[in-house]
Image (cartoon, rainbow, N blue to C red; front, side, top):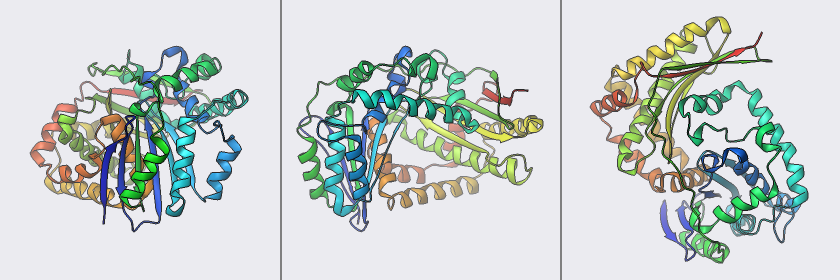
Length: 412
């Protein structure tokens, strides 16, 4: 039986416990309200750099201690930085929960950003960015925002630019972010999985209650730009496949419009399924056609993408634009809508049995949308989406006379 509890520690840290005692694992997710949209252009990539440094040493643990203690627990640790959040993730067998929370709190409360490790870590970050740049599948994340969000911080790459920023960022830059924004009131902790409510509550209090830091919240600007017909061609050496992405900027998340947020999620599922059928199964033009919908604190976007042989770009473009045009006109029926609604609701049920996914999802919603309960609310909201509602939302958000296109082509 699932139970949950939400509370705030005296220092301002928001905590959400999602108890599913039948599970053998517990997921921990500590989200920080700081991402690439909060950076100054000259230090773009600093949020991601700092994320790496949280694993490099505290007042009582070295990076090797952290690695070995995670391994000794048989656990999993990771983190990611996005435009509006940096999120630290742990998954442990439930008997090791206290050790996991102790380690997570020490990393975030007592990081020393060791000087030696800082200089060494610059190399892995540069190479991570190179891997990212070499992967054409990152068209959605790297190139589309540059076209959709011109003049807004969201156009900057999350990982920064190796030559312009990463090689110039100093340890002091990271300390400034750490001291200003890594504070309890700017964080959200989720504990999800095989743990009792009271046990999790006591551990959260024990290891995070003494965490004190001055409160500063990033000042963000919501993107207000309007869609325009834009097309950009990027030619890149060393690739053989072309990739095309077509997308639209949308409203940022608004707690008063959760039903529209949920509806756009279902519309995206319809587009994704249709592209798989039309581009891959019926025409054999691509291995990986897909679409993605995101809505956060400052931006919203939907984009469809596919990789194909350069000679087939026009065919893929026509299919993607055709599917968007059909969605805009409301050319989908109740059967298709209900199938996607059912599929999405089932996915949420599966999430409940994956403790880390559950913790990550809840913490992210708590930080970005200030709606930690969104995880539980969405299935009920999705269930109520009508065909008329879906068609109105589609018509509002999709305008095929004003789409943005990015074409990545091999450079001859």
